[in-house]
Image 1 (cartoon, rainbow, N blue to C red):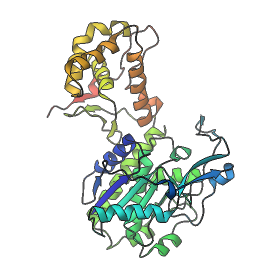
Image 2 (cartoon, rainbow, N blue to C red):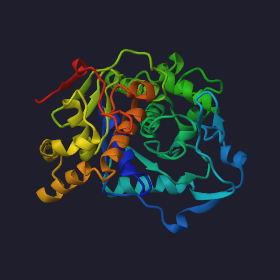
Image 3 (tube, one colour):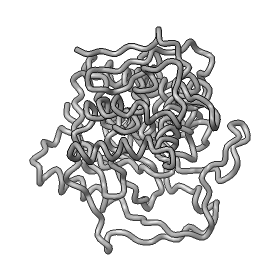
Image 4 (cartoon, rainbow, N blue to C red):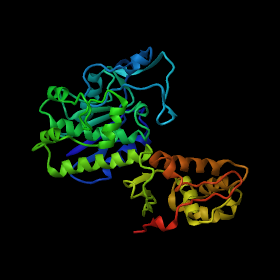
Length: 388
């Protein structure tokens, strides 16, 4: 079964790529494809700048919810001791109706000759008139959308995790229920940790993500609708997302450390933490790989002594630009009067923290105070590079 993912122009390429990578990480009969070249745009007359007058209006969802309500807490989350994204009211945001969204799916489907038994799911930053995060099309249930904004009100992790989760949820919900009305009326009002929990409250959404489960009644509805291989793949993806979200939310900070694996394509993985990939840019990887090699650490003022080694690493990672341009980028990074290296170290840290939480991340990123030798403290017995 093919699932075609498309996006509008406001969804970042990074988030879109991450969602695809997460879904494709586990292979099986569900085939996830993306079209990053055909951007789905909304014309000016297809959306309104809808005013959100206050917190109550922002939190209100209209109608029965299939998956997630868009209720949000615009307050300090005391348990997590972190400020959630706040808004200054009143404010306006692009809002369109479901018909317009699903018309975009149908136009794309027709233009690209996509069969009626294959999914077309639009990822969009544009809000919708019902203020939902995700839905299937009542008239054509192989069409769906996911609203990609506002996830940070619910879960402290990369947006790509819950978005990918919702892709799987829509696929399963299409096959669990005989029609749209049954879907609308069969969600669990009281949360039980099932993919079909209504989840009006933030804590209920966390429960769903923590369990990544399907209750027995809902599982029975899938009987004969999907193959065992398709169900197994969907559940495996949900489980991998659950593990990734738990690590990024600091729920699993006392577990043994994972190995650090670098594959033949120079991608960085933590295989024992749900095979989480740490996404870094080539210059950031250049610096990170240098520090991985030098276990005793390197002070920033001494990076110039390793310039040739950094040239070699960078040229093996990137083919963007000519050789002199690439040398210039390294020269800038090792320049003691430049802040380039410190900025790269900060981005490396952020990449690990977002993926596995601050406590576990400390073992993997480059650390050291001002003026001190900087190093990666990870025991190199946990580090492995695959060259085949």
